[in-house]
Length: 507
Ligand code: NAP
Image 1 (cartoon, rainbow, N blue to C red):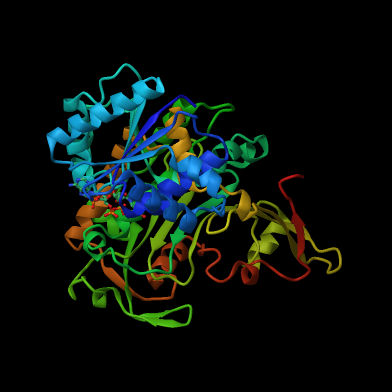
Image 2 (image 1 turned 45 degrees about the vertical axis):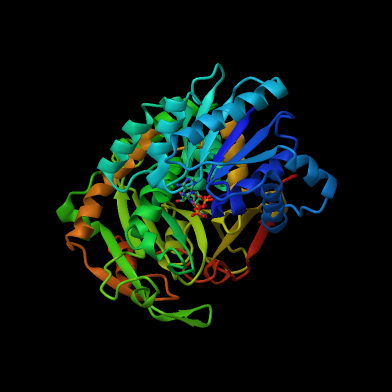
């Protein structure tokens, strides 16, 4: 890795504490950071370098996936950290920052490669980009990169405005828009798996009946009421993470695709996504809000009783949608997407349901239980399961599904932020959201936002601790399908005479 100064806006914040410092620590332990790596933490809080380092140490001891108990190693890691007070609105603070960075680059005799990580609220993104440009922080004779957290805009117009402002200070190839779902190892595997010749042969409307993308959680609005009530599931999850998963799954990547090809193909998927007209939204999109219920045996209150939420709030805490990609590969294959809070389980997964082509399979289909399925478990567990139907030799005419499971040991799984920070430090944009993708996503979602705002779509209540409103099930039932795994997977997979083949990493 080239020597780099990692300039962190929001160094005293929650994201830095829980994700960024632990990710940097694990990269350091894996010797993925340059020996001349420097971190300059910024915030308004008055901290000395020592207090800052103590905070970083506390963060890695609390949140690192690897236990951080080697004091000498931690000491070496913390050596790279410095802290400065910077008020985002104060021009002179950027000048002071520039002097500090130049001084450190000179002392360390390193090139002025600077990565600016904006771990602050979105209202500050434009101001910081302008501050970097006006102060000369971005004009050195090395590379500069801007890593920016979500949300990227509130709707299509605000996203365009933000992008236009950022592009005055950074070129597109210098902007790394984080969508942390793209950092998840299983999502990154989708890129590689799609280039596998076996899957490639099956990856279209001849073989695939439908695709289901689910990201559900058991928690409610938590402490984010002020933010979430203006955002809802559609902006918080659907426009970014869920559509990114769709793009990753549906883009047909040629072998050895580079980042440019990946982004080109993702863009093609978004361009082929059939647009929804405002008046058609209610036929294809289900909006829900959780009411009181019980999650994992514990009673919980409804959304409008949560602290900070108005009793009259019409905000969506659940959304399910049916999407169609109108291209050669996917025409006629429905993609069902759902995401929600206060659901029965916490899970992010993609299920590919295959068409039943043979006689044997038709029988399997007739019992409604066992089509061939390919399941990508993205979180909290990582794994791939293939359910194949075979004849049961002991019960003539019976069907017996075989399961092939691959599950990654949790110890080996990198945190999304490790992957993303590593890539940003190396200038690899593959797993960041390109502006084209962001703009096309907002464009697709815009009629939904407007239909929600004008109440053209009913807000369906659902009891906390369920899988959302019944209308979400009806959305699939109309097409003759159902959401897979709404019970525990062990219950849902056919258990009679089940055979399990475990494929571990070293096989
Ligand atoms: P946070 O805990 O509220 O931290 C905000 C940071 O911004 C603090 O370090 C604060 O430092 C700094 N800040 C605020 N106003 C400032 C100013 N005027 N000048 C200089 N610094 C200022 O927020 P967060 O949860 O870390 O979130 C940061 C970003 O990540 C947001 O865009 C959020 O949407 C995104 N994000 C967060 C999470 C998460 O899990 N937390 C997940 C995904 C995305 P001082 O108080 O010291 O000034």
